[in-house]
Image 1 (spheres, rainbow, N blue to C red):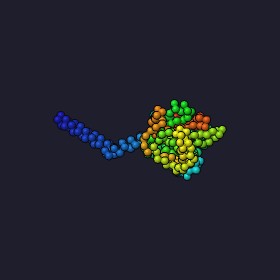
Image 2 (cartoon, rainbow, N blue to C red):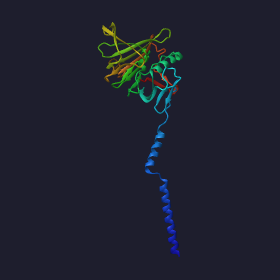
Image 3 (cartoon, helix red, strand yellow):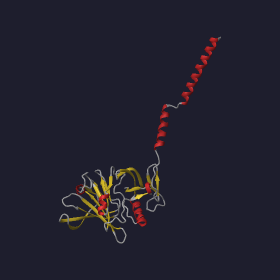
Image 4 (tube, rainbow, N blue to C red):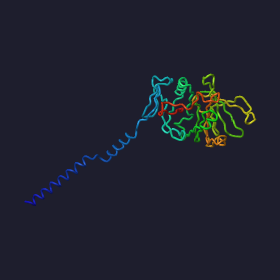
Amino acid sequence: MKKQNKFLLLAVCILILIFSLSCSKKQQPPEDLQETTQETLKTVTTEEEISAPLIDGLRFDQEIKKYIAESNNPYGLEVGVEAGLLVENAAEIDGKMEDCVGLDAKVIEYLQDRMYEETKDRLLPIIFDLSKSKNIKIKELKSVGAEIDAKVLGINVPVGGEFLAPLSESWIMFRPFPNLEDKYFFTNWDIGVEGKLGRLEIYFRDAEILAEMEEGAQFINPKEGRIQTLMRTKTKLGDPLGRITKDTPLENFSKSDWGDYQIVTFLTGKDESTNGLEGVMEVGKGPEALKVFVFK
């Protein structure tokens, strides 16, 4: 009788073990379903919303990371057209990577005028489309700017980078330094403060000129002592000025120990001050503000 009880107890234990294993298998989803679930969770946790600055008349689409024109936009854009985008890690600025916002030229011109009315600052966008031109490095040369009362930016540009007009104006181009290949574009424009003029200079060395140029007046370059012909063009904001063809740095600024840059820009006022010309345009407020570039 005792043996029968032992056998019966053993049989019951075996049945319980088999039942437990069977339930465990039923509770485990198929391997392919487990992988799919894990991938779904991974996607959900990694796709976080970007904190994009609010811009009047534009809606930011989180899926495509672009600004879309709304019906009440003041820029003259058709409803639903792409008016800008946010580029993460768009450029290295003063040694750190920054996100930047690219905007349609119509939006930038409207914001330039509105910001000037409110603050008397004439702000300009970065002169590259950072959605296309990659590995741009921008450094403010503060010691140089302090010496000459100007906003001076040294820019490292990979070969092929196109620099664009940051405002709608007439431009003049010539070679400013004797026996050097350095060239520059410059423009003057009325900033409206007691008749003062703003001045933007864009120095470069090896570049294909993309703007349509025509010959202007001749003059004697005081630094070279010989006659040069001014080349002129008129552009709209966002029009291409030139394309870098070599990574050779500007010779004059290298010799002056300013650093090795393919482009150097100067932003000054008529009286050699930066009054009303405080630098690069931004959208947003406080630490959330992002610098603006021209989105073509």
